[in-house]
Amino acid sequence: MSGIVCYVGRELCKGNLTAALQTMKKRGNSVAGAALQQKNFVSIVSNGTSGLCDEIQKYDGDSTFGIAECSSIFNNSCAAVPAVNNMYAVAVDGEIENFEAIERWCKNPFPVNSSEDLLLAMLCVNSSDNKLALIKKIFTAVKGEPTFAFAQNGDDVLYCHRGDSPLFVGFCDDGYYVASELNAIVPYCKKYVFLKYHESARIARNRIVFYDSRMKKIKKQAKPCPDYALFENSYTPSEEVYYCPLVLREIYSRIVKKGEIALDELNFTKRSTEKIKRIVITGNASAYNASRAAAYYIESLCDIPCTAVESTQLRCSGAVFDKGTLLLVASHTGEDNDAAFCIRRAKKFGAKTIAVTNSAISYVAEICDYAVNPGADFNSERVSFREFVSLYMTLCLIGLYIGKKAGVVSDVYMSLSLKLAEQLPSKILSLIRDEKMMKSIIPQIMQSKRVFVTGLGADAAIADECAFWLEDVGGVSCSALSSSNLAALNRESFVGSAILCFVTDALLMPKILPMLKRAEFYGAKVMLIATDAIYEERSNDSNAVTFGDSMPMLNVLNAAVWGDKLSVFIAQNSAKNDKKAAV
Image 1: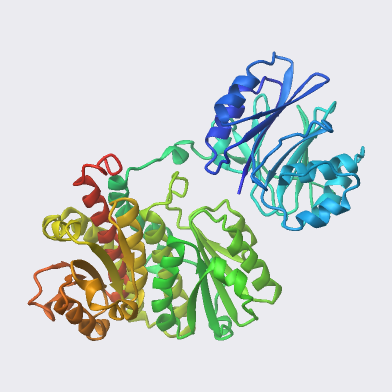
Image 2 (image 1 turned 90 degrees about the vertical axis):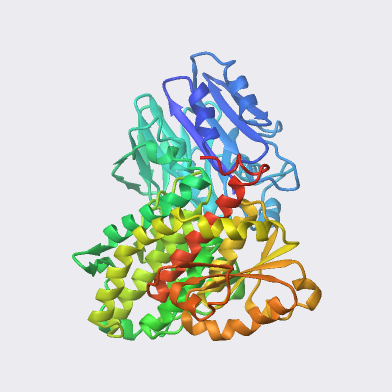
């Protein structure tokens, strides 16, 4: 995925354009820029934003237009504006699937190296005074629906079109900005407009006109830009851990009102829940781990079959949706293209879709029937511990809500669940601060030849999440294995190994205990992360970390945050990683 930043205005773009580009989260190695200087058209290609900035500085105050773009590179090469025809400057965010078909469709095409070049070829071949008709012709011919912007030599007007990728138009005192990420233009703009799917805009220096998919003029209401401080938050891993209880408290206060789950915007009734025959939850990375853990409990809460599938796998599987399917899409940023594809396919067959994303301004939230926004500071630069915590908590609350509407969850159980959820942040904070037991097991982890993390049911998802952070933050080489795969290892694999086993549900302890005893017998060091009640069943084990009992559904969050804290604690006590986890 690439990115777009454009500027149209009365002032010289210079530093603002490149500064906006530098805030983009996803950048390629090559950066291309273009400027209109009175009647002269200039194109620039540089390696990195610093080179682009140096080139832009050369132009005087008459330069009124700028484009900067990051390239999705095809064939390991990129050319911003081919010298054969300097008629247009093009910026593209997204991939074009029917690459070869369009190349043949173009008359006398010049060599096409990238998606930007391909759209440029189409523009040049179909040169027309009617740019809006040209936009429509392009997005109907191109598969993959990229978002793009272009300008023609001799015309101080920018045309932009929204495809699969998001596109924002910002309003400032000196003109307009266009970007595929809101945080790139917030420092310079007072208001913004979020273009919907297949909407377009014609942007001049002092006027902007919006169009729908049929190229008819429409009115768009600009919204005030959020506080830029929201986009500046960049926490260290140590701060991230302490932020998790605050996230849980914020989600609880947003969704639970007067002792009840306030999700009436989902429009669920007992009759509508009876029509749901299965629930599918999808997501990628930490969102997928949260989906797996939540699916384990949502099935029992709603008495409806529930499965979690990685969005990439769901897209390629050709899964069949119907009117009896409820698709829950978990996404931290809400810009998961695989999930978006699954949503469109599910809606085509009549399935109901709900987006659970920390970004209210996202494509996934836009195209779903309903959206639930936990708002857990989605703008941090790196995906963080908060992603799993916020999405899992929100999915569980949705499960309780649907279960209550279906008549499966009783008033007593609902009241107890919400009471324990309200107390959870303070319990997790106490768990984070208690480092005594953690100090005793860290030497065993660091001295082991290899580390395995395992669990059953929802704990298997915690194991995957913990293994990722132990390797990414803690610098520990470890693997997450299901209990069946771990049990299948030979004797040599256990010698000198350390096993972290998560058990948050007492019903699962008898199933996993034989495997742990076998691992200990062959020389592995087994460390149990469980509740106090579960630990009492195995009181002869000194290598254990325990925390206060709650309901199994909420114990997952205790264990997950403890795993995050462990990775940070290891990094802080390792000379090679202390910079990574420094407060």
